[in-house]
Length: 88
Image 1: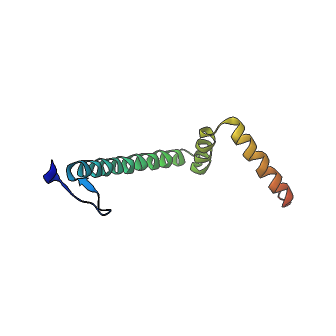
Image 2: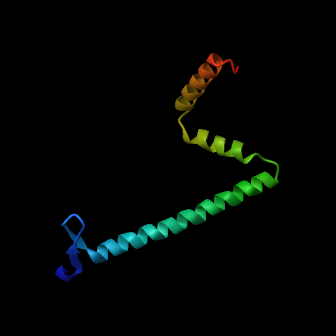
Image 3: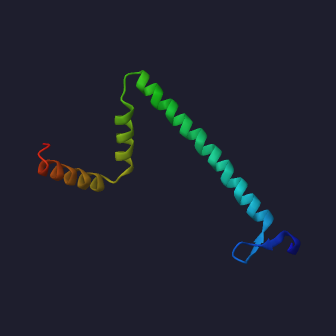
């Protein structure tokens, strides 16, 4: 295994095979991420073609990720700022 090790940029030892496997794994995940991103775009295009607003759908998805209390606090702050600016 000593022959697989080379000097790293920081002067430390690097296991070439382990590094290669990690890089390849990250590359595969990047490919999967792009595929999933494309799938989401397709869903949004379908929603739009059926008369739904993709921006609203994305906003709902964002809200659903948050805890209820967190969302309510954000909304209260937003409303307070909008009132201060005369927008409400």
